[in-house]
Structures are given as C-alpha cells and as structure tokens.
Image 1: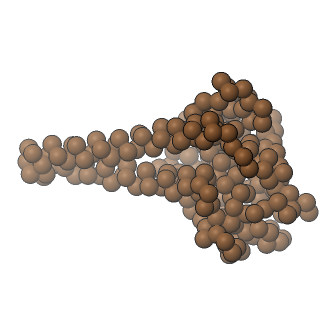
Image 2: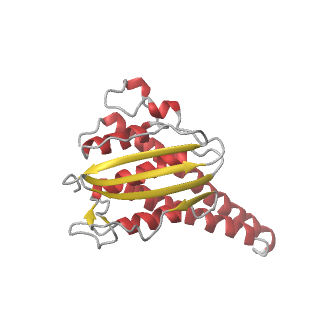
Length: 233
C-alpha cells in the first residue's frame, strides 16, 4: 500500500495531538509534586502523584494501541481464537486487550466477547487487525458523550466479516470523516482530525475490501468490513 506523504504527516500530527493532553497532565502532576515538596516536604503530594501516575498509565496504553493500529509491526491474529501466526508476535486477542485498556476509564463501555464462536480458524492478518483497530477509533470518535462500543465477527464463506457499533447520546459519524473515506481526496480536504478516517479507508482498499456504513435510526454508528479470503497477510 502506497500512502501519500501528506497522509503520513497528518497522521503524525493527529497522534501528537492525542498524546499531548495526557503527557501534559503527567507534567502538571510532577510540577505539583515539586511545589508540595518545597512547602511541606511532600506530605500533601498524594493527589499530584496520583494524577501523574494515572496520566502516565493512560499515555502508555494509548501509545501501545497506536503502535498496533498504525505501526508496521502490527500482529497477525486468527479469528476463532487461534495462536498468532508466524511472523507476528501480536494477535487478535492482544488487540482486544489493548482496546480494553484504552477504554479503562469507563466513559465508553467495550463489548468484545472473548469467545467469538466462529466455525473456522481463519487468519485475519496484520492488515486486518490494523483495520479493525482503526474501525474502533472511528467508532470512538463518533461518541461525543460516551456510550458503548460493540465488536463483532462473522465467519463467512467468502471471508471474515468484522463490524463495530458505537451507540450513545449524539452518536454520529462526522461529515468531514465521510468526505475523505475515498481514494481521490482533494489535498485541502485532509486535516489532522479526519486523516485517520482516510487511512482506515486505505487499509480496507489494500485488503480488497470496503468500509460499509449502514443507515441507523440515530444515536448509533455501525461500520462493517468483509475481508476476502486469501487477502489476510
């Protein structure tokens, strides 16, 4: 898959923006610790220490998720619960753990059953796992006031189906995301905020698939992809 340099640059900007908040919170906590130490030897620094520790943990979890969603070394998973295939030290189960850790604050509830009860043990592939994590990010961005995120799989005759459903107050796919979920995107249409939607579309295209967005009654966003048999890698 060939990706335009601007897409890469905007993705980097998006990642830096997303990480800046939690890194800043770590720094703020450490500064409060310094102030507490200067005043009373650190006796009242417990709150600051808790803030720094919580923010550091959040940053580490977000980095781990981003590494698998965007990095070259994403794992190869098997739908149906099999071990990771040769050539990748990560798996679909690892992706589930990373998503659960990312949402550990409880604002959004993740429903991703460990037992997927699929008939066959089909490899989803590194690119398939990356695409799934990007679908999850799109779902999270569709929930301005929290809610729930469901992940589902289907073992089909012509491939592996995977779908996400984001539900909550005001849930909707942003219009500027929809406009860039295609190949021919005007240069001025891509921004650091919507570039991840374009990247997800490119991942799907590279797998010979397409991201489907069925219409819903409201407060719900569904995304679905069929990864054709033989395209997992």
